[in-house]
Length: 465
Image 1 (cartoon, helix red, strand yellow):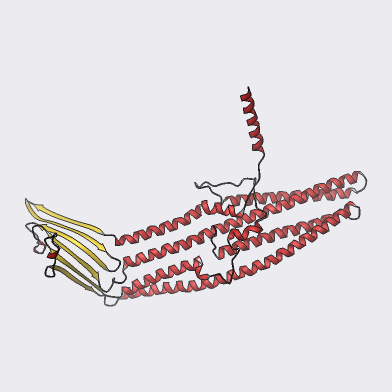
Image 2: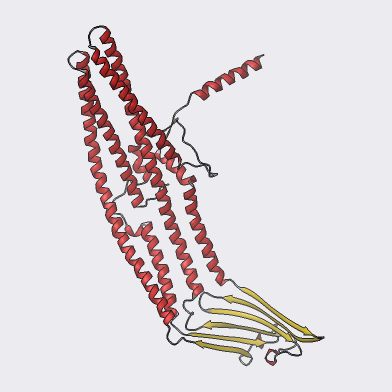
């Protein structure tokens, strides 16, 4: 019996607890932490780095040692025309050199005389080199250098993408906070309107107030209810917009619950959240800006391409030298008398293709340099403008706070005079409307101030923990 009583008690307690929602505050710092950790676009930005790392690995593969085996055999009408085996081990180097060890064994009735080798085969070891075109820079060297630069550029671009996501997310948070504060204002003055309507109605029944005052109080009450309902809908919409940035680790979207509230003290923590508390325009180093660094890595990559195209103007001069021996166990059998060597030379007469490629490379490089200079000036001026704008907003916030304080004083005085019979409901409502407008303007100004802080965070591309 006690067991069933305990179970019934737990069920009733769970039911009561589920009906009572406990409110919880989600700060801007916590919210941006969720976005940075789980938002799909942030994860997508990380894929750019993974892609660049894969391209770097691919470029390094051009310098991997290689084993090559070439076997060719022909038999016809019981005759072995030829059997040819050629196995090689090659080690390419960073510059235009390639080391090679080779084993060749050929046999057959109709074998080409130049392919004749000793019975046990012929061993060779040597080096091939491009002495002009391709010595100091070639395609695989250029690809490797560019892949390293692209990886560094991708890291800077990734920071910009993440910064933009956090910026957009913070704007949604500020809109949510603004609508929540507006709803609080309308709730506060709805309570005032309800109280004033009840007191006016009671005063009417006691013969102290005319009937028209109850009508005016009822209109004010309905207006407050209407404004509160509009504010509620705006808050719901902004909550749904905020939910667009909330995800779980398994890429599951999260819908913001009604019991989660914004932090009304965001003003005191916004600088620490955006890591701009110590930001100083004079100490702002434009050369460390991710966009500028990204452009500089791009310029370096284009410069590598320009040097590669310039190298293509040189003629091809490929040489190869191999020591030959039939005894691989005795290194002293390698000598200068037994060798295989070749020289290849090639030069286009007009070099029109090569000269055209070089001109295009120079155009792209200069274009990116001009873009870099313009970007530096634009970012500097924008940061400076935002700093001045923030200083102005601080002054405007102080003035607006004083206006709200004075309107509050006027309303309290007018309200007191009204209930003493020395004022009218019209004047009380007029004072209250002015106070509501002042509070809404203060909320809007604070929201603009927050957005400007976020704009500074975005423009300077400041990283947060």
